[in-house]
Image 1 (tube, rainbow, N blue to C red):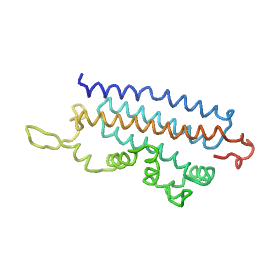
Image 2: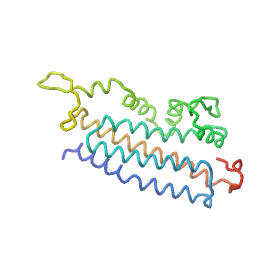
Image 3: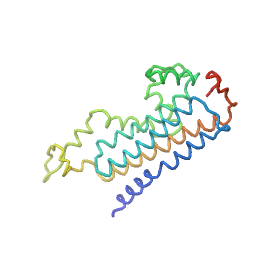
Image 4: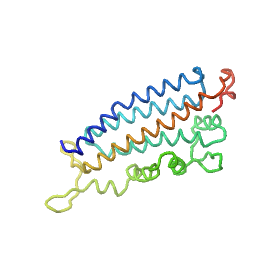
Length: 222
């Protein structure tokens, strides 16, 4: 195996065991503050579960060399970090949670500074926590929406001539370089670590709160 092939295999292996860290963090969140329950806990658990399942989906797809389907999952993973981070940008997390659970669009809700919680706004705010988030957000969006990246992925070289190809499931053309695959796996890992950082912030905040009145939703504060 080449050095790049070894790195790719190592990154995929690291992704495959990442659920252990999220399971432990979920248990830590559950036990925090004498196992007190807050409405935000349910959102934290949804992020943990979605993160684990998206990671497993990514691994399944890359193992079949289906990168066109796998790469958008990096953006969906980043969405976990953005949406949970949004809670930390509002005046009343409980009100935001109820708004969220009513199916209303997050991008219309305003932060404590009066800015709408658009994905681009949240990406800019997260950039301060983890430099590189904004660049990744912009780059990966190209793989979510039909873009030039998909046009490039439909081309291949044959005897120096650029040709177009309709996908052959049994004999697919490898549209991405090994270096690109390594970078995609590294980005998936990086987003997972970002999610752990954001969720850990909630765990530490929760630990310092007074025990809520279980009979009153208004006492369940962020």
